Length: 247
Ligand SMILES: Nc1ncnc2c1ncn2[C@@H]1O[C@H](COP(=O)(O)OP(=O)(O)OP(=O)(O)O)[C@@H](O)[C@H]1O
Ligand SMILES: [Mg+2]
Image 1 (cartoon, rainbow, N blue to C red):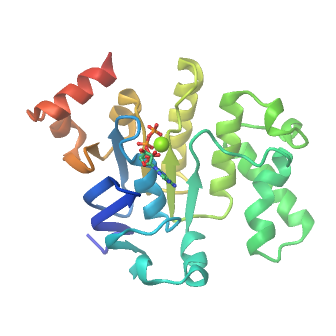
Image 2 (image 1 turned 90 degrees about the horizontal axis):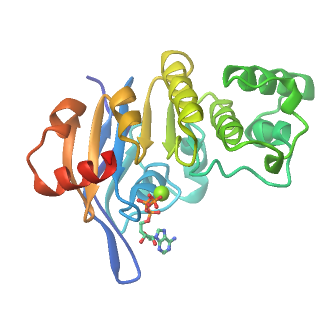
Image 3 (image 1 turned 90 degrees about the vertical axis):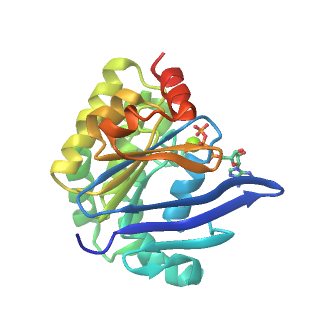
């Protein structure tokens, strides 16, 4: 195995007095889908934001593409972040921008492409997530929840990231739309981006896509490994969490 694409080593993070992460370690290998599960408020989004260099650890190391992010300035972080696509929890599109402008955003910010090329890329990536040109001029408020997720995924993919970070990609969707998003993630892994970290409550999603899974409980990974092994772990906290999730 080569060097991990992303690695957290004994990362700690508190907000005020309350510790959220108290020693989290994992490594994402190239070609791998690494899933992080945990209860609401357990620190899943915080972990993903640390991995993306959006926030800094109190201690420990966050490495991405061979560099220690906690040592980089904001300016030095920008090209590293560009190598990752981030699908935010709840899709988090820019409400005042059309679908076209939302998806085009990173190309406008980070490339010198002309309008015709940008348009071509936007249409290509919307097509990839199963949306056609009819949605280009719509605002996020005019889309269904499932469509918003798709636009969020297209926006994350358009910069040709080496890693994609998904925060709760199926949350809030009905079973049909959740299944479509799962299929879309599998399609992304088979095609444009084969390495990802996925944060989710969704045990079915985990069983379908995970190569390895980690369960975040009380600021640490209570279990980490291939899905089959983790689901059968005897740790009572892990079993209690999984039983609760599966209900
Ligand atoms: N910027 C912040 N300032 C203060 N507290 C924060 C901040 N970000 C996160 N927290 C706190 O850290 C804890 C973990 O938050 P996080 O968003 O990572 O949870 P989560 O596991 O993603 O939950 P959910 O499943 O509900 O999305 C929460 O108690 C939250 O209030
Ligand atoms: Mg979250």
